Picture 1 (cartoon, rainbow, N blue to C red):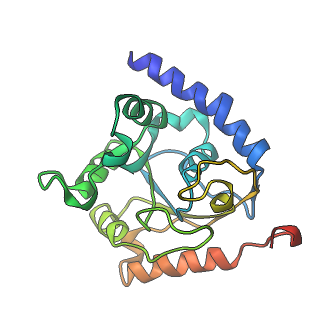
Picture 2: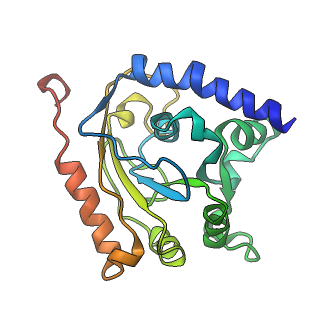
Length: 217
């Protein structure tokens, strides 16, 4: 069964997600992609759409798909049997409890354990989805995780456009270009002083660097 789920996940991203992202959404790189070639690693990105996770996974080579785990809310993605199966086996989420519902489980330790096993985590520092093309304040979860795993490289990525393609609260998919800007990886070990402010500054720089064609502005 595990092998079947692995094949289904590979086919889902190879046959459906990657073509949709490349052709229908129209993914555009604003600079040279800077991505991990293996784990452990953490991708952090802004969060405006359910498509964010799919796009981020599609950026990575299929050969390391088995290492990729998006950090996601257990109460949302495990609320029924089919969604639970799809989220765990096809998207490959690492389910965590929001708002500390289960005090016996530490979400940071869950993430650290996955990183210790060589996983590539997808982590949204804002927590939940914000308004289209607007970043909200970063929560301190990313700081706690970086402090717990100070040598693990963190790759900041900024995406523009997905908030218009499938924004929070909408179920209608509207094709719209997605622009992606990459940044050099950072570690807590090298950026421990004011790490929170360093991450915010990195996202501000990425956001400011987005260059859009006139018809997108």
